[in-house]
Image (cartoon, rainbow, N blue to C red; front, side, top):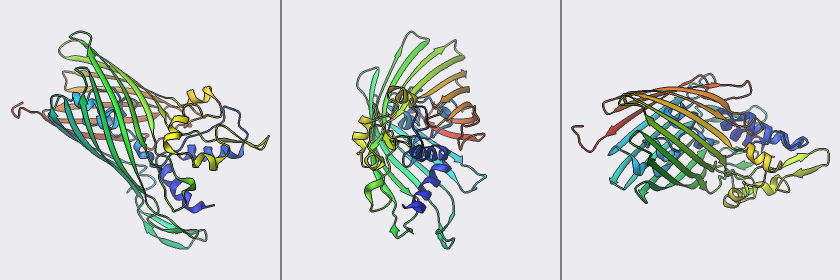
Length: 399
């Protein structure tokens, strides 16, 4: 099997803190299935699952129904139609596992522009680099130095369907270059390219002059699979997902305000079958791994709601929970806290998040910090300060 080639792919997943999940998926193929055993879902280009901003990053990744901002196109593109500013530009730079490689980092650039009172457009770039890697063959012979990287570019249009409801749509181009064309075990590899789309709905309504509620629904990264060679038997799924979210906002007085948020999300990616070593059979919706890998992305998204080997119980384990709370003082200083939960058999990411935000004139500065809450929870952002800078442009230059 193309071991060295897939080791290169797993290297990227390792850099994203998901190595245990990938290994467990393949280990489950050689162990008996009990319905409670690890059965992780892995995808290509997992950077698209990473919170790009320090705001949602401090709220446990609860961003679907958060107040519209320059990061809305990642969490829910429909929100941009409700944006208060005429235009906004933002960026996040995040050092990544610096103890392994000081050149490893994550970069996000985003911006939106209002067209009129009911519609807006936006664009963003997500970029991730693994730094410099010296590649060797199975005998230890040098095969050259290369810099694996992945990026995604997208464009968004959002419009209000009614005074309280908006619809958004995004088109995304994805590029993943993990081996930079190296020949691996008599096979020529290539960069993988894919096209994807997002669709979002956003609703907000004022209960009274001090209270507001919001709800959101978004489908993300629905598109073609990633192919790293001319062999199409093991193409990688994109990290397609469905997310629903809600927000409750309460202005206590002219100076104090709180936001409470919750998101529920699930991967729209098939659950792989598990190998039952006792009966020597594959358990699950798919007859074997080959059948699983040949499943198309659209069909796989539909089947992801009912294909788990453990039935409904395992399907519920695939739902991730994000909780967040935010306090604003005088619309200048914000304190944030959140919690993210993923079942231990589906990735085991469980962590507490903290953060602050400062608004000064047209500038916004946001910071977040992540703390794993279990010994088996790993995340590349653990104990790392993530920083975001945003510049807002109002229609009235004097303001």
